[in-house]
Image 1 (cartoon, rainbow, N blue to C red):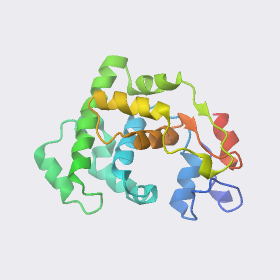
Image 2: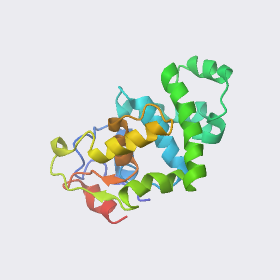
Image 3: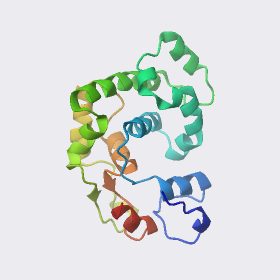
Image 4: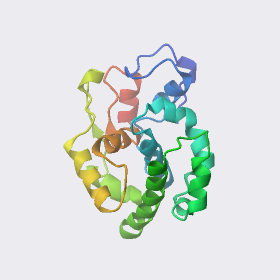
Length: 198
Protein backbone atom coordinates (compact mmCIF):
# COMPACT_ATOMS: atom_id res chain seq x y z
CA UNK A 1 0.00 0.00 0.00
CA UNK A 2 1.41 3.36 -0.98
CA UNK A 3 1.76 6.01 1.65
CA UNK A 4 1.09 9.50 0.39
CA UNK A 5 1.83 11.42 3.57
CA UNK A 6 4.73 13.28 2.01
CA UNK A 7 2.40 14.89 -0.55
CA UNK A 8 -0.45 15.67 1.82
CA UNK A 9 -1.15 19.23 0.73
CA UNK A 10 -0.06 19.13 -2.92
CA UNK A 11 -2.60 16.88 -4.55
CA UNK A 12 -6.33 17.21 -5.37
CA UNK A 13 -8.58 15.14 -3.12
CA UNK A 14 -12.27 14.41 -2.67
CA UNK A 15 -14.08 17.44 -1.25
CA UNK A 16 -15.06 15.71 1.99
CA UNK A 17 -11.45 15.43 3.14
CA UNK A 18 -10.54 18.08 5.71
CA UNK A 19 -7.01 19.17 6.61
CA UNK A 20 -7.02 16.73 9.54
CA UNK A 21 -4.00 14.43 9.15
CA UNK A 22 -5.98 11.37 10.24
CA UNK A 23 -8.63 12.05 7.62
CA UNK A 24 -6.02 12.64 4.91
CA UNK A 25 -4.20 9.40 5.72
CA UNK A 26 -7.47 7.45 5.74
CA UNK A 27 -8.55 8.91 2.38
CA UNK A 28 -5.13 8.47 0.77
CA UNK A 29 -4.40 4.94 1.96
CA UNK A 30 -7.62 3.10 2.83
CA UNK A 31 -10.87 4.59 1.53
CA UNK A 32 -12.09 2.93 -1.63
CA UNK A 33 -9.38 0.27 -1.77
CA UNK A 34 -10.98 -3.15 -2.41
CA UNK A 35 -10.94 -5.11 0.85
CA UNK A 36 -11.38 -8.88 0.85
CA UNK A 37 -10.24 -9.83 4.35
CA UNK A 38 -13.07 -10.95 6.62
CA UNK A 39 -11.29 -9.45 9.63
CA UNK A 40 -11.04 -6.05 7.97
CA UNK A 41 -14.56 -6.18 6.57
CA UNK A 42 -15.87 -6.82 10.08
CA UNK A 43 -13.78 -3.97 11.49
CA UNK A 44 -15.37 -1.56 9.01
CA UNK A 45 -18.80 -2.96 9.83
CA UNK A 46 -18.25 -2.24 13.53
CA UNK A 47 -16.98 1.27 12.83
CA UNK A 48 -19.84 2.02 10.43
CA UNK A 49 -22.33 0.80 13.04
CA UNK A 50 -20.99 3.23 15.61
CA UNK A 51 -20.71 6.03 13.05
CA UNK A 52 -24.47 6.12 12.43
CA UNK A 53 -25.55 9.66 13.35
CA UNK A 54 -21.97 10.85 13.95
CA UNK A 55 -19.11 12.11 11.79
CA UNK A 56 -16.62 9.61 10.36
CA UNK A 57 -13.76 11.70 11.74
CA UNK A 58 -15.12 11.18 15.26
CA UNK A 59 -14.94 7.43 14.68
CA UNK A 60 -11.47 7.57 13.14
CA UNK A 61 -10.16 9.43 16.18
CA UNK A 62 -11.54 6.68 18.41
CA UNK A 63 -10.59 3.79 16.12
CA UNK A 64 -7.69 2.56 18.24
CA UNK A 65 -9.83 2.82 21.38
CA UNK A 66 -12.47 0.67 19.67
CA UNK A 67 -9.75 -1.78 18.63
CA UNK A 68 -8.61 -2.13 22.24
CA UNK A 69 -12.12 -2.28 23.72
CA UNK A 70 -13.43 -4.80 21.17
CA UNK A 71 -10.58 -7.33 21.26
CA UNK A 72 -8.97 -6.12 18.04
CA UNK A 73 -12.36 -6.48 16.29
CA UNK A 74 -12.21 -10.27 16.70
CA UNK A 75 -15.76 -11.28 15.79
CA UNK A 76 -15.26 -14.74 17.30
CA UNK A 77 -14.65 -13.19 20.72
CA UNK A 78 -17.28 -10.47 20.28
CA UNK A 79 -19.94 -13.06 19.42
CA UNK A 80 -19.49 -14.50 22.92
CA UNK A 81 -19.55 -11.24 24.88
CA UNK A 82 -21.36 -11.53 28.21
CA UNK A 83 -23.65 -9.04 29.94
CA UNK A 84 -20.69 -8.17 32.16
CA UNK A 85 -18.62 -7.28 29.10
CA UNK A 86 -21.44 -5.08 27.80
CA UNK A 87 -21.52 -3.25 31.15
CA UNK A 88 -17.74 -2.84 30.99
CA UNK A 89 -18.00 -1.29 27.52
CA UNK A 90 -20.73 1.06 28.72
CA UNK A 91 -18.30 2.50 31.28
CA UNK A 92 -15.49 2.97 28.74
CA UNK A 93 -15.35 6.71 28.07
CA UNK A 94 -12.86 6.28 25.22
CA UNK A 95 -15.47 4.76 22.87
CA UNK A 96 -19.07 5.60 21.89
CA UNK A 97 -21.10 4.35 24.84
CA UNK A 98 -24.32 3.43 23.09
CA UNK A 99 -25.91 0.24 24.40
CA UNK A 100 -27.96 -0.40 21.25
CA UNK A 101 -24.85 -0.15 19.08
CA UNK A 102 -22.83 -2.36 21.43
CA UNK A 103 -25.55 -5.01 21.42
CA UNK A 104 -25.82 -4.66 17.62
CA UNK A 105 -22.08 -5.29 17.30
CA UNK A 106 -22.44 -8.55 19.27
CA UNK A 107 -25.45 -9.60 17.18
CA UNK A 108 -23.54 -8.70 14.01
CA UNK A 109 -20.57 -10.82 15.07
CA UNK A 110 -22.89 -13.78 15.55
CA UNK A 111 -24.60 -13.18 12.20
CA UNK A 112 -21.19 -12.70 10.53
CA UNK A 113 -20.12 -16.18 11.67
CA UNK A 114 -23.35 -17.67 10.32
CA UNK A 115 -22.71 -16.05 6.93
CA UNK A 116 -19.18 -17.51 6.95
CA UNK A 117 -20.61 -20.96 7.61
CA UNK A 118 -23.02 -20.62 4.69
CA UNK A 119 -20.76 -18.97 2.11
CA UNK A 120 -17.25 -19.96 3.19
CA UNK A 121 -16.39 -16.35 3.97
CA UNK A 122 -18.19 -13.08 4.55
CA UNK A 123 -16.04 -11.61 1.78
CA UNK A 124 -17.42 -14.09 -0.76
CA UNK A 125 -20.97 -13.32 0.37
CA UNK A 126 -20.70 -9.51 0.23
CA UNK A 127 -18.61 -9.27 -2.96
CA UNK A 128 -21.08 -11.55 -4.77
CA UNK A 129 -23.46 -8.55 -4.84
CA UNK A 130 -21.07 -6.78 -7.26
CA UNK A 131 -19.94 -9.94 -9.09
CA UNK A 132 -16.59 -9.68 -7.28
CA UNK A 133 -15.68 -6.56 -9.27
CA UNK A 134 -15.62 -3.03 -7.82
CA UNK A 135 -18.19 -0.68 -9.36
CA UNK A 136 -16.27 2.13 -11.06
CA UNK A 137 -18.20 5.37 -10.79
CA UNK A 138 -17.11 8.63 -12.41
CA UNK A 139 -18.50 11.43 -10.26
CA UNK A 140 -17.37 14.92 -11.20
CA UNK A 141 -18.31 16.47 -7.86
CA UNK A 142 -19.13 15.40 -4.32
CA UNK A 143 -22.72 16.57 -4.84
CA UNK A 144 -23.27 13.77 -7.37
CA UNK A 145 -22.24 11.00 -4.97
CA UNK A 146 -25.33 9.25 -3.58
CA UNK A 147 -25.92 8.42 0.09
CA UNK A 148 -27.41 5.09 -0.94
CA UNK A 149 -28.36 3.14 -4.06
CA UNK A 150 -30.80 0.38 -5.04
CA UNK A 151 -27.92 -2.07 -4.53
CA UNK A 152 -27.20 -0.85 -0.99
CA UNK A 153 -30.96 -1.16 -0.37
CA UNK A 154 -30.79 -4.79 -1.51
CA UNK A 155 -27.70 -5.63 0.59
CA UNK A 156 -29.16 -3.90 3.64
CA UNK A 157 -32.37 -5.88 3.33
CA UNK A 158 -30.49 -9.17 3.00
CA UNK A 159 -28.24 -8.43 5.98
CA UNK A 160 -31.25 -7.55 8.15
CA UNK A 161 -32.89 -10.80 7.13
CA UNK A 162 -29.76 -12.58 8.37
CA UNK A 163 -29.94 -10.90 11.78
CA UNK A 164 -27.61 -7.94 11.30
CA UNK A 165 -28.52 -4.67 13.04
CA UNK A 166 -27.71 -1.01 12.33
CA UNK A 167 -27.24 -1.93 8.67
CA UNK A 168 -29.55 0.57 7.03
CA UNK A 169 -28.96 1.37 3.37
CA UNK A 170 -26.90 4.52 4.10
CA UNK A 171 -24.63 2.64 6.52
CA UNK A 172 -24.20 -0.13 3.96
CA UNK A 173 -23.39 2.28 1.14
CA UNK A 174 -20.75 3.91 3.35
CA UNK A 175 -19.38 0.41 4.00
CA UNK A 176 -19.30 -0.30 0.25
CA UNK A 177 -17.39 2.94 -0.34
CA UNK A 178 -14.93 2.30 2.47
CA UNK A 179 -14.17 -1.27 1.40
CA UNK A 180 -13.85 -0.52 -2.30
CA UNK A 181 -16.97 -2.27 -3.54
CA UNK A 182 -17.57 1.07 -5.25
CA UNK A 183 -14.97 3.59 -6.33
CA UNK A 184 -16.53 6.87 -5.26
CA UNK A 185 -13.43 9.02 -5.42
CA UNK A 186 -14.34 11.94 -7.66
CA UNK A 187 -12.58 11.92 -11.02
CA UNK A 188 -10.44 14.94 -10.13
CA UNK A 189 -9.10 13.20 -7.00
CA UNK A 190 -5.55 11.85 -7.32
CA UNK A 191 -6.72 8.53 -5.83
CA UNK A 192 -9.43 7.92 -8.46
CA UNK A 193 -7.14 6.35 -11.06
CA UNK A 194 -4.93 4.66 -8.46
CA UNK A 195 -7.92 2.87 -6.94
CA UNK A 196 -9.23 1.95 -10.41
CA UNK A 197 -5.98 0.14 -11.08
CA UNK A 198 -5.92 -1.86 -7.82
